[in-house]
Image (cartoon, protein in one colour):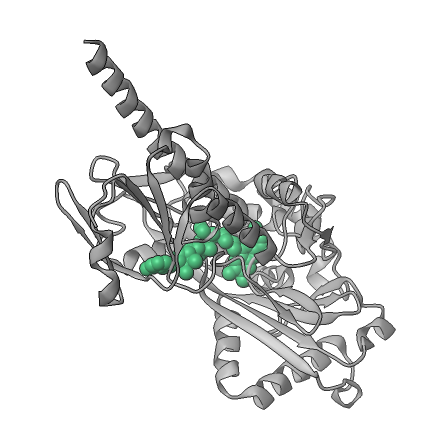
Length: 428
Ligand SMILES: Cc1cc2nc3c(=O)[nH]c(=O)nc-3n(C[C@H](O)[C@H](O)[C@H](O)COP(=O)(O)OP(=O)(O)OC[C@H]3O[C@@H](n4cnc5c(N)ncnc54)[C@H](O)[C@@H]3O)c2cc1C
């Protein structure tokens, strides 16, 4: 089938869905077929929730702040989603380093300008010594703050824009929310809206390569039977994170921009119990930051407990899960007992559990200088790529929405120019 009035979007995360919706809602795409090709069996990518017993849990994206994430907030208002407060903005069982930390960080922030090209770790070490720096970062619970590529500016952004540790910044009062039904409810709603507008969805279509010549773009999928149908596409949007782009034969990133990219792994583990025993310890709706591999431990009302880790401790938990269910749960419970100072024999064994490891949970541009364009393109703007990683909101759904809409605008501008050129030819 040859049809060059096709716009193909690869990836049905928030970037791909936002791009499709904006294109489908424009008069300029009248006569075009919009298609989304998705590797998996569902939409949403890293926005992914599942039901365990009666509870929806977010294995990926799990919260938003209306102040920081106005586009997410607006989509959720439109959806009429069942929103609840994400209460984990107050730390219990404070770490010794938490005392005075807000003031220390505020004073050091004033010195950032002179520390250009330093990592946050080097920056802190030069002012506090490496021992205190270790203790401070341990107390902040996000191990990405140790990474050499995390500059002081990015580190402050992390501290100010994460609910658990915003209390060490001026953003202390920001409110955070989650969806009772999980963020899959949001992406499912976007999927339904796109389908109603005529967007075609093709699941289990993994793009593996690309053939481009002057007039033709051929998308090559992992299943050979899927190949020949999608030969001619007028525009192709690769709504894929940098790691997925790098696995294609499209010379990414070198052939696209001067930017380079990094990613870090994330791990979330959920434990369900017969009784909400943590209520007896006054822990419901509280979060604690811990000096052991659990790192951040959350007590979700009377429903369940979860922990959330990044970098080396995400890999640690990934390895633990491979040892088998019993060993994994035993490690979690032992570390929980140590962290809460409750004898392990007093803690019940979970009746259910769930976890998810994300090899590249957060993706970002490594260059801290220069603004990253929200869209990168090839072939006279006919092939473009976009991702939350290219936006100032990398690692957030907000970034995915902004990225997808920017990609759509990029195509709509070209369609508008083509329409104007046609009118001019007719007039002449
Ligand atoms: C554990 C975790 C916690 C998070 N917490 C939050 C949070 O609390 N709040 C928040 O706002 N954000 C959070 N995020 C980040 C948020 O989920 C992402 O920023 C956002 O979902 C990115 O959307 P995207 O469309 O750009 O990318 P993705 O969601 O990664 O979508 C990319 C899609 O492309 C598909 N794909 C990949 N390769 C191919 C291929 N070759 N062919 C076809 N399809 C392909 C994938 O299957 C996927 O569906 C979290 C992420 C994780 C992992």
